[in-house]
Length: 234
Image (cartoon, rainbow, N blue to C red; front, top):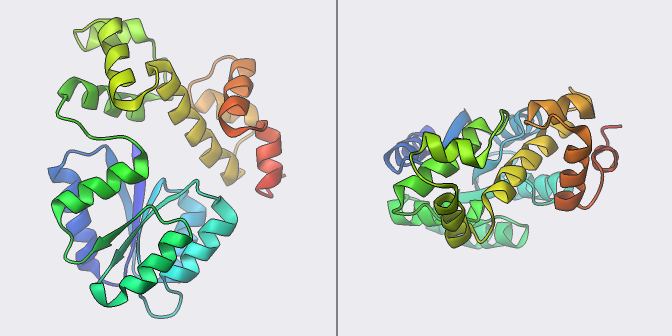
């Protein structure tokens, strides 16, 4: 499941975002609401969210400050969606230059919200229920054994049909998507410094450590150890 947090000094923003995620049946879990920039930054460092909904204008540490920190430390690994009133649109454009994925203008429109999520994640929520279910299944079960043939049986379809859907909507294979989700979670776990590289590999569904190293290097462009050193975790 994709993990998101909301950093906004208005509680109503959290309620609206929560409602929209539920109504659109998106595989995203809201893990917390933080009503100040500093509290939000502390949450980012401890929770390693995949998506941050960030208000641009808050007392004290504002959205631009947070964006600068995210850019310096996470280098695009955390997807940021700016939430703002029109009065602060110029500030939001500055955040886009710092790497934010999209801007949501208050009051948040459902279509605008769905487009922003899809832009941040890099894939579309489609009208194909089988594909949407498969994506949600992988996002929720990547830590276990995922075999295309067995998934096809569980979803009463064929491996070929699943492969066609992933190629059509994501332009990648089913296995490539599984590995992508696993490696993204591996990066989150490695940044936390709570687990060894071997423990991380097993936590995300790799029983073969060499296989984990190969896929990590292919996707990230460096070894897990090099990644930890770059993030200051070794």
